[in-house]
Each structure stands twice: as C-alpha cells, then as structure tokens.
Image (cartoon, rainbow, N blue to C red):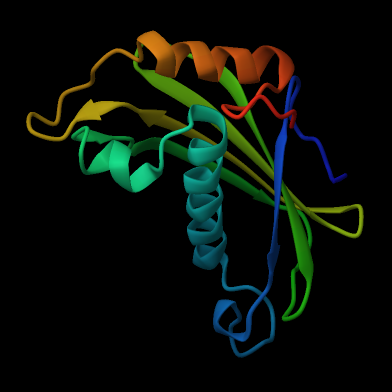
Length: 154
C-alpha cells in the first residue's frame, strides 16, 4: 500500500474509511475522531509488529502505554467516505518510551500528521518500566527494516 511518509525508516500501513459518525455538521472529520482512529491503528500495529494482541498486553501482562505527548498538524480536510491511508512509524525507541508518528493521507494527498510519545507503564504502580526482551527486539527490527512479528514486511 502506498501513502504519505512523514517520517524516516519503515512504515506500517493500514486503511480506514471515514464514517458518518466521524464527521461534524459541516461534513468533515471532527478532529478528536482522528486521535481515536490513530489509537485503533496503534492497536493493530501492536498485534502485527509485536505479535501480541493489545488487549492481552494490557490485560494479562498488566502493562499500559499511555500517551505523554501528542502533537498534530491538520493539513487538509477529510470527509465522509474518504479512504484514508495511515502510515505508522517508530521515530525513536527509548528506555521505556516510543515516539510514534502517523501520516494520514487520501489519494496521495497528505491530510494529517500526528506525533505521539507513549510510555510503557506497570498498571499496578503507574510507574514507567523498561521496554525489554522480545518486545524491544521486535520493535527495533521493525524500526530498522520493517520486519513484522509474522516475518512479513511492512
């Protein structure tokens, strides 16, 4: 799948159709809905790249990934029925944090760029915990070459 690339390195792509429920009375996507769509993409990316469903990571493993920084540049309006390509990449892998970038486009036109920083936390204590072991290895492999948990390529 092709689409806008707002960041360097590997990008994982997914698509979303703009639904009526995403839009305001003016017929364009109401801006908070983009953040919900980005979160849905993150959950899909987590399954594809890390190889663990997000609900298992949060539930069984007791880990959270709250956003501690969020920035967005709205580049053009999106409307009901638009097919959005979302290119997601890891700009930085820290000790306990990930800098995730999302580039939304439609028909090759950039629509939105979102930059987030998320921190892995222990849900019992609320404190940051290091990203280690297989989790770090899989994210690093994706960041370097686009390798997914299944061995497929982004």
